[in-house]
Length: 496
Image (cartoon, rainbow, N blue to C red; front, top):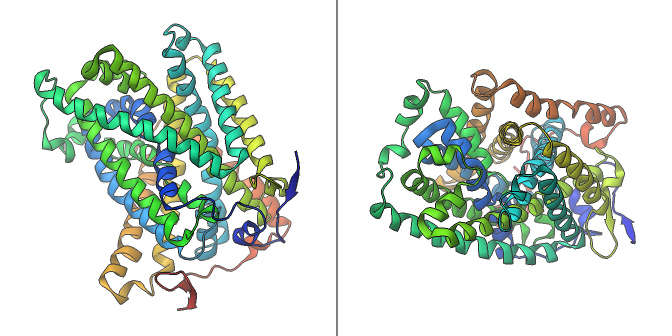
């Protein structure tokens, strides 16, 4: 295997390195949309997280997804604007560090890395379980078989990621197309089924706030539900991490992310409403795959099997996009000497960070296999999802605030600029910061969840202290605070 070092001089930006290594222009606008949707993994999110959401907020699931979806779209707008400053494989890491402060940028990048590693564990469980459940329900409940099949799927996806972004995108087109087609068919069947076999009639109150306080007698469930909803939506920003490999990235990467958020928002809302109507709460609470139950209810045995296929494809697809996202972040950070230089090594022919991919794959498989034999896999999954929610809230909040600061001098030139450059990004960032703080102090999370989430973040003190001591140019750079801004449209920079 031939490799080439693609690490620029200390402090070099990701874009400079990309011109020598990453497969520039390999993806198009439609690819960016597909990658954003695949990164969110709608079928996986619904199947793996709905029981947790319903257990936390009851019938307020649609409201949690709605009221978290709106600020999440604000974060997607922020990413779209920040892409105009120049595409970066590091995305939030690069933009936050440049505008607010290098240490905050490093924090954003580190939160993405540790959340991705945790997700490799949370995502590999369903990959193994749903694959086995197509053939043997007993095998799907055995830790050894789940660990084996989940690991095989993960390593196959790692190979695709290592081989190149175009091959990865082609695989995503196939998997995501089948997944979305199945989801659309069954959401229609779910609405058709509801009047014939009603479990609960639809209520507009499911989109309001009344069910939050009714569920546990306080407002704490709203914050808990919003944190779970953040996990639902997480992953669309992979389109921005692939910006350096996307044609016309200053427009395509961010726009692809925004469209991806809209698509999954609609799917999540529709499916959560259908689940409320068609699937009994008791069934949801005892199920490891709500979509399989819904498939059985509205389509019989074949419906259940088809929903298993959708979840399997979705899980495999999101393992792939998450691996892409974390390896591109590692590559960008290594390029600027804030992580070991080996993570900046690219394959000479495949134009991918092969060392980073191999390390992440190895660490993830080890963590997954060990976790597979834990006393309670469901507890591991719940703790991981909530811990990831904390880390997502940190780096999304930083990105939203960064966009508002970076573009504040242009925001008042028109109403559209005011909304898209200031209001929506800032509201999105502040909302994410609010649910992060409330989750820590409001009592909606358990001690193990906080320990996993914040402990993983705290580990980052070690490498950042090491590279600060070594005099990393990135960490010594002065933030611009928006003093250098792009003009509208083409992203050409000017002094504001």
